[in-house]
Length: 133
Image 1 (cartoon, rainbow, N blue to C red):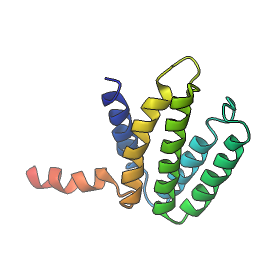
Image 2: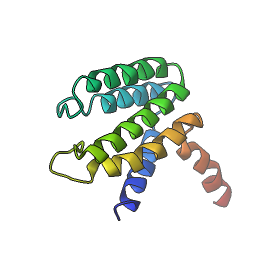
Image 3: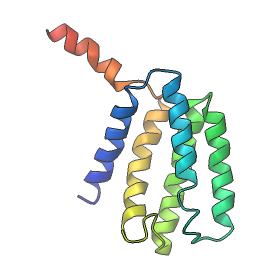
């Protein structure tokens, strides 16, 4: 369940995001990755590196306003940061020991979707549903 739940959360994020029409879906995801980039700031477990990381992800988010690739790269950067925090014993949710580990599994699911263009999975399923009715 430690691995399955984060994968399902990532898939649920992709599904729910798919209901947002373009270009708002891309913009929404750029804002979400920006927020994820700042998620570790309050813990400050890596000192000044937290600010450097946040700046890097903020740059990806800004470029992501026009490019799904940058959003995907931002999620992959966050994945790497999750791994570092997990190994340092400084989880994203202080009272949930494996929260950074789970985030490191969830984030690549979202990143792959973004790197593939963030297309709506709902729109892809609709023709199949219509054809069967």
